[in-house]
Image (tube, rainbow, N blue to C red; front, side):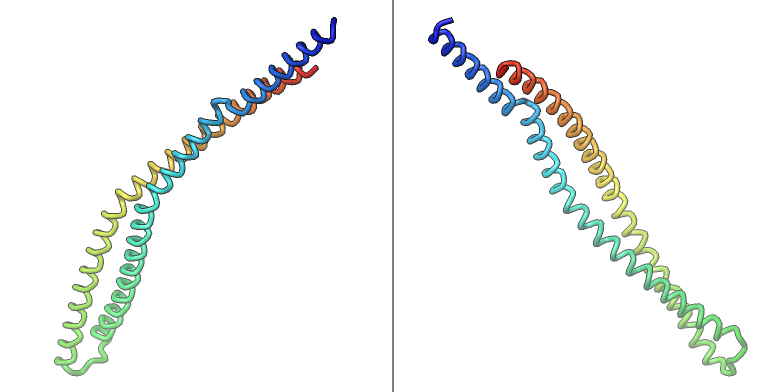
Length: 165
């Protein structure tokens, strides 16, 4: 083999190696991973607003439930005063009865507000659950693409090794 033939052979090997390195760099799985990252970022941004709304509604619900517990405690205290026999004045009993009725109305109003909040939270929970499923699907697909990428890289690396040998 002449020097020129060896040089041409070396050049062909270098060209083949460069092509393999380029092919490794532009494997389609890399573009798929970029697209999956874009989808995930978009989905997370899409979920942020309903999540914030749901969190606000849940805080309101907790506040109302705490207020209901306070009203129930006050009503129980008034009922105890009404029925424990310690009252001597009918006027005082009427006042306590009016207080009790007012507390019961307030409790009923608060409970209605809690139900309304729960009705607002339910579709948000469904939307967020669907987003969790979609994010899990993206994660699953990403794992599969990464495995495929590793396999493709390994195949190109083996070819590159053969070319270099």
